[in-house]
Image (cartoon, rainbow, N blue to C red; front, side, top):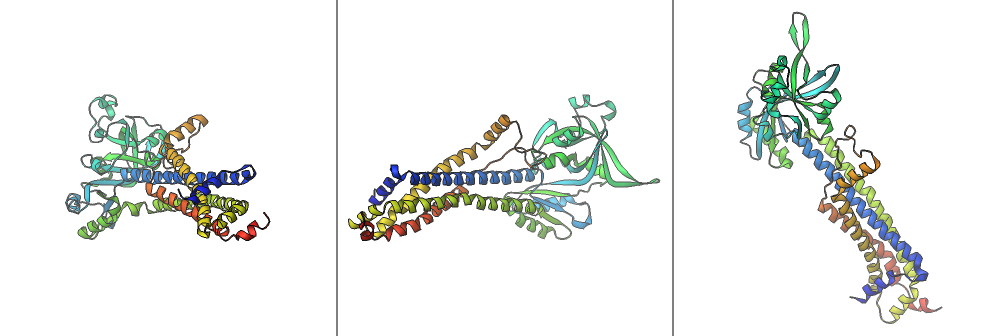
Length: 427
């Protein structure tokens, strides 16, 4: 152990007359501790939000969505799928039908997004989350015990899968009959009338994403085609790829192979505003919380300046005994770095402990104070997610230690320039 480091450690142990300096040093450690812990926890939550949103969005929505642009429905979709699956990086594809409609149950009416899916290939591409009630297989044909729970007059109807929030909002239960009303009317001698069909609710899903659970409903591909009178055509093709961050490149390759009038839209384009807002919020939170560390750094400067003023005599004696200005400077730099290291280490431990157990902590707080931290009808998510990114932790640690080092330079320079003769003249 160098004598500079030994002396810096001794200076941290305050004597009775230096209690005020010790208090400022403790406040500095506490400030760095709070700043580092807050940064780790908040960035973990932001990373968790982004990952959870991306997972849920890309569960129900595909990585790439191929449509026929302005030409309307896609008729030769099986041939198009063969071309798509030959593109490098593509994992699977499935056709879909998309439309907006109204759902009516009793006296309750709500807007709904209808998606027709091919049950044979869809679940290689999309993930609906948890099926709370019923079975997806009944979309194609209602069979088994389900038939006994449906009135005989409704046994011929096609099945529909709805979100948990939609079921709750409209008071719909499993095996209830609902009416879907399409704004695309049909021509009759009496003029244009809305297209209406009855469906049996054969399943209730929960994606964990309020926006989807309250507005999405799924039909089998054939049911959706019949309802919209599309024949054998589809709206488009959903595609998933190996690397989601190469979706834009693969989308361009697909579009290049198929040419006009096909249009390949990737998940980054479809959700650009949402993820851009999350990244901006993450940066702003990092800057704001870094101010806590900067305030603690000013406390380090104040504490070191006061120590230098208290230790004028000690510095003069050390210089008289042969200590160089560089050694004196190192002594006070070490002192500031010890304060920074202790605060950073404790902040890392506390921040990581909270970040790794954030869900349990949030559930405990909700139980104790009887309130919901993330109401599902206000926020996109119903649970508080957390994901620790170790590169973020490394940046926080290195950045904090750098700030602590910079805060020691002025007091250390001032101590190193002390004239021993002037300091000892009146002693």
